[in-house]
Structures are given as structure tokens and as C-alpha cells.
Image (cartoon, rainbow, N blue to C red; front, top):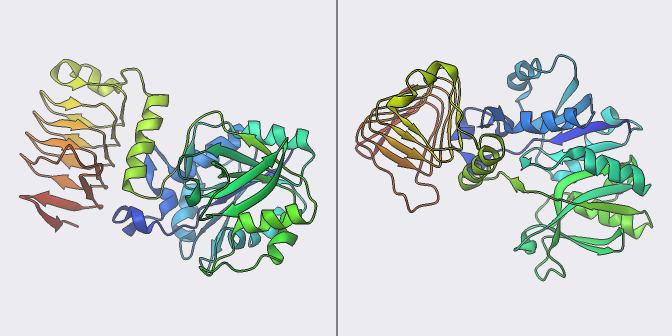
Length: 352
């Protein structure tokens, strides 16, 4: 089935600051790939070769260089000038989509789900839209769905008293009929246009809305705790075996790796260091002697000194933790440093 892709990646990433002070949210790295790359890769694997990406205002120049990593794919950037909600974000790609059906995904989704399963289900449904659904413990935070047989018969965004625990997972195949529904979608009390309200209009107009239920994990990366959880899930899926870059193998007897761990190129690890489980060391990261790291992310050129104990932490590019620093092992997120920040004696300093 030939269709286009749409990635909604215009979130401002406020809850991921300070990481998003220096990069748009779509370019936040996780296990060797950015959030945006992970969604693009999955679309390409599903056979989509033309993708429209809705991005934050004034980020086109920064993101354009990134697009050169995909020379054989047609990629289009469309800036969302105002943050007016998911329905508005879809509406601004109307001219690029044209008369095609399209797979829409939220750009901060991370999942092991195979997008082609949703596409194939849509082809079988002969539906106006086919939504990916999952069951959750707190449905009131999501778009809650009611089903009857193979069809969705109702959807409500963030209801106070949800009637089911089945919710929208931020992935849907649409026909162009969605644009007509968006044009009639009222603004929410929060001043946004919700895509779930547009889908509800299609239901009220008599359109068939199908669904597929996720058979694996899916996570929406909104804050630091989400990022650490996504890191755990991806490492478990992709690096459950001991994985050490070739340049470190000759020294691997000098330190200990507890999988799952991702180690990028040009990483340096000191003697008697213990790395893992659930640690990502991006390119040129550095770990000092006698340092213990677990459940943490070091972006490129980040470094940790000697005799440290670091847990549940995220270090931005070029960030530095000085010698003898210990984080709490009880807090879900113990330490977050932005790009170029340094911490020593519990004082934070900017170094570039």
C-alpha cells in the first residue's frame, strides 16, 4: 500500500530542559539515534519513502543538515508557527499530503511496534482512519477509546471519568477525509485543536474508524524520567548482549561492563570502572577510574571524573562531573546537566 508519512515533531521540549536549550526536541539523542531518526527509520522500514515532518518554529535551518542523512528519501520540513494542537499540526501538511493516505506518528513516540502492521490493518479495514491503541493504567491522561467489534465508536480526549483503559497511542493511518474533519474541529478549553476531537467528528459523520492493538511497548518521551525509561527499553531490545566497541576490546579486562550498555565511537573508560546496567555512552564520552555508572545517559564528549558513583542521570554534550561526586541512587532522576555544564562540590557551572 503506497502512502506518505507525517511526523508531528513540533513540541518545544520544555520538560526536557536543559537538554532542549541547545537543540530542538526532535534531535534529543537516545541510544545512538535521535528521537526523530527513530521514527523516520521505522517509517522507512515500513516502505514509506516520502515523509513530512512538522517541526518547531525557527528550527528548519538546524534540522536541514540532519536531513542529509537520508539521501534516498523525500523529506519535507514544515514549521508550526503556533502551538495550536495536534489537529492543527496535521492540518498544516494538507498541501504536501494531497490525495494520499498517510501514516501519522507523534515525534516523541518511542516503540518497538512495527508500523507496517498498522498500515496492513488499514488496508484490510477499508476505513477512513485506523488507529493504534494500547491499554494503560491511567487512561484519563490520554485519548480514551470505545470499541465495538472491529470499529471505534467513540473517543474522548483526557476525560475525567474514562469508560475504558484503551487509549490512542499516537500512531494512525488517515485518508484525506481527516482534513475536512479538522476544518470543523472546535478549539478546546486549553486553546488547542485536538486530533482526537477530529476523529470523533468522523465517527459522528458515519465514517468507519478501525484500529490495531499494540503487541509491544510504547513510550511517549516528555521528560527526563521518560528519557531514562526509553533508554532502558531500547537497550534491553538492542544491546542485551555485552557490546564493546573494537577500540575498547583490548582494554576490556581493565573495567567491567554489565549489559545492556551502548558504547559509541571513541569512548574512553578508566581502570576499575563499572558501566551498567542501562548505560548509554555516546561518541567520545569519558569515564574516569574507579567510577560506577548505572541507568544513565552520557551524550557526546560528556565526562565523569574518578571515584564517582552516578545513577539515574543524564549528561548533555560536553558536560562534566568532577572527581568524587556521588548522586542519589533513590531518586528516579538524580542529576541532569545541559550541554557544557559542569558540577563540582554540588555547584553547577557553565563551561562554554
